[in-house]
Image 1: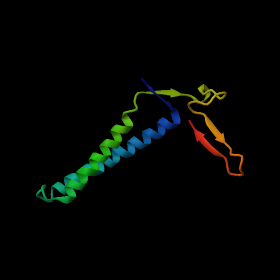
Image 2: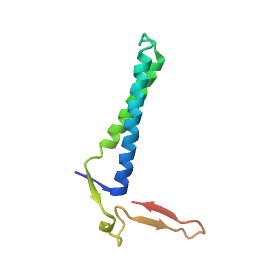
Image 3: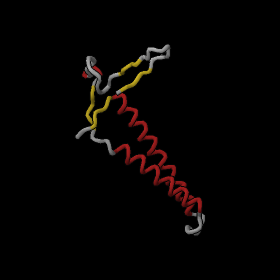
Image 4: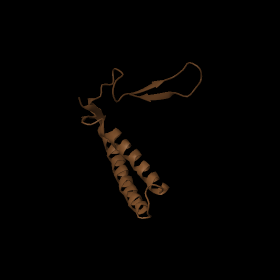
Length: 103
């Protein structure tokens, strides 16, 4: 089943994925640099870089787990009921600022 997503949100996800790919490349360089320092069993720099790369791969897999996507255009969003893509504003009876929630 496809995940519903707005095009603007998809563009933001693409930028985030590009940033993660860049971090992965940088971390790979850190790993190779740390590995060149010698014994890997006692090389804390190497182990830290490997752990960082594992975290980066987890973030990437988490973002990819929502694929495939089905795009929803802004004009496809119904505004007469609360649903996907709607912004709802709640105002308490006490004099407080309104709170906006996006679904």
